Length: 262
Image (cartoon, rainbow, N blue to C red; front, side, top):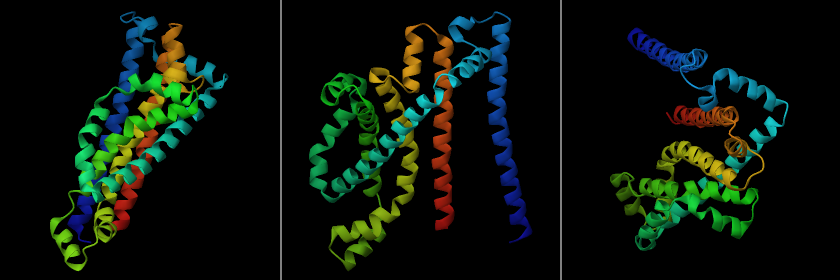
């Protein structure tokens, strides 16, 4: 590698470190100002809590089954995430293969996707009961249609020249899908994992609001019912941390895949 290219790589890494440092600094500055405003009685800690109160609440929760709540939420999110991706890929593949079927059901998919999924909560409870299954199904409902449409659109927008080449060699749509459509869209599918994990988390928390007796969604709902804003804010902070960790795990996998394919 040339000296100029090495300098370019160093500058790129330096810029990346600076961005990460600024991002972390923003968090600490925000927390500092939050606590400062509470200490100066400019904002009411009963309404907005405070970093100090959140830490105290977190210490209390650690001694009262906090990790059971975290494990419950993460396990439900991962199950919902995996099932959503599998179902979405299968549905998108079927719709791509049968174009007429897609044209028939596309308006219905749009209508179902526009429905507020919380409104389906009572129906899910009646059908599947007030249990973990209902929470996972809620997570799947939130994400599966959006992901199906995203993946289908990616399948439908493959390189036209490559598609013509494959078609010149075979008339089989199955072979076209196997040799071109699916392999060329693996990066898109991996990118959609980030959307799926966030939407699965949203769906699971919504489900826990409705039926759960454990999980971070339950803690937030319970805290709001007893007007304990410290508990509510602690639950929200924990959810933010979990969402960030899950996002960066997928981000890391995406980058690893890009390195192996280049």
